[in-house]
Amino acid sequence: MQNMIPTDNDFDRWIERRGTDSIKWNLFDPDVLAMWVADMDFRSPQAVIDALQQRVEHGVFGYPKEPPQLRDVVVDWISRRYGWKVSPNAIVFLPNVAVGFNLAVQAVGKPGTGLLYQPPIYFPILDVPQHAGMEARPSQLIRTGDGHYEIDFNDFERAASDDCSTFILCNPHNPVGRAFTRDELERLGQICLKHDLFICSDEIHADFVYDERKHVPIASIDPEIAARTITLIAPNKSFNVAGISCAIAVVPNQRLREQLEEARRGLVQHVGIMSYVITQAAYTEGEEWLDSVVAYLQVNRDYTRDFVARELPGINMAEVEGTYLAWLDCRGLGLSQNPHAFFLRQARVAMNDGARFGPGGEGFVRMNFATPRSNLTEALERMRRALNERE
Ligand SMILES: Cc1ncc(COP(=O)(O)O)c(C=O)c1O
Image (cartoon, rainbow, N blue to C red; front, side, top):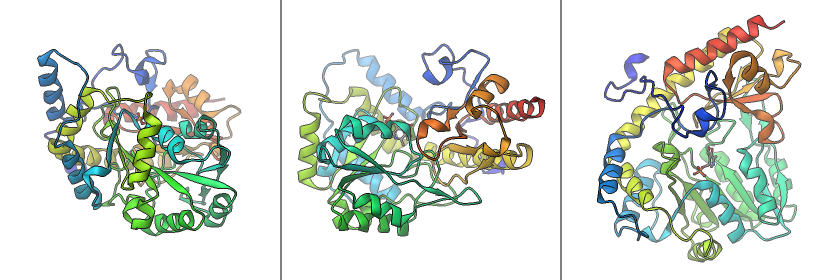
């Protein structure tokens, strides 16, 4: 398996991040291994670093103007990677995806109506209904015996038909790791069409899909679905530049685009100049790096899955089809306390507390495996020891 990893990218190399204002590595005591917030412990592609350095060298950082050819670069990326043809007019630059889904819902959602989402879910999505003056309409994903998650389409339609105006999709899904199939997306899209829902599709993990999968944007399935969808993607996640901020909304429908522009006015006026620099460099010169990192992550995923199955009895890991986040069901451990608190205290490993992700998250932890294998191995070993040593 090791041979699959190209040697020109040194993802095995440990880079110390403590003391670099990283929230991931600075939130806990120095002896704790940080396996939580979703950024990677890898250097960004050299082309991105070079482009940033070149721009820094200029030394003047006044208000930016969108570079003229950048939309074409983004459109090419979307076509090449996801097989979706969009017009350059559909592209809107945003500082990040969390701002994007809040603005999108405020742009299209109707106050007082329902906002549908599928918990357990990336927890800032749980706050969106309140920000937008809407009501939460959760439709929980179903966990089957082997840890695979499925959509309960009857329940989804029940929620969609309950005075609902908007659906926030998360695909690939954080934290359950599903990369929804074309068939599933089509069924979701058809229900949204039938009940006249707008869709805000958070596809920030689009570039992290495994086992030869290809990411399918829900809007790419059907022009009618595209006409009611705001899709969010981001170099932020794919090229590990979240600390600089850089995301993209794809909005083929001009009216929705105008609504989005209206919602951002005065609040999110422009993106930082470095966002443009990153997007240009990453989408034109970063593809090989991205493919290499995904190959590395796939081996980390397999390693984690096999280790959990072999060495951590009582924990069940959902198969990760997309994202670099393992969703660990710890309910079988019989712990008397929250598993996040247990592993933080006893193993000195910080993961995300599953309970934060809403219904269906209690008793789970989310582990970020986008880290050099030596660190991943150490974290899993610490967890094994903590479980063996418990009274
Ligand atoms: C599903 C999902 N959406 C949005 C975000 C946040 O992205 P950004 O930093 O671009 O706001 C994350 C980060 O982990 C995420 O997992």
